[in-house]
Length: 125
Image 1: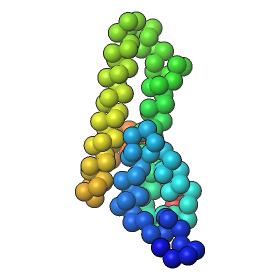
Image 2 (image 1 turned 135 degrees about the vertical axis):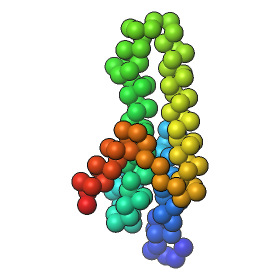
Image 3 (image 1 turned 180 degrees about the vertical axis):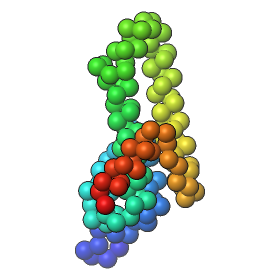
């Protein structure tokens, strides 16, 4: 890397797309890639950034005491803990699946979340 060249300038689009699916922490590169100039015109990276960001939002909604967690508590009582863990493991599984698929240059559009990512992508162009 030469002086004045940023870290993002030397990053490939494939690497950027993969970083969007780091479980729980992937939202950070998602925001950087969506806000930065480097990938502004790369629809593939932007799609993965939006989809990764929406996966993180799903994690937050599941985790939030006011979100699905409270509904599960009211509906299932003591089984809530096990259902919470199962849903968290499922989300981590989706992140890992997306890491693998994206590393192989396969663009997977997740149900609902992928549709939102496509809509967000089309609004930005």
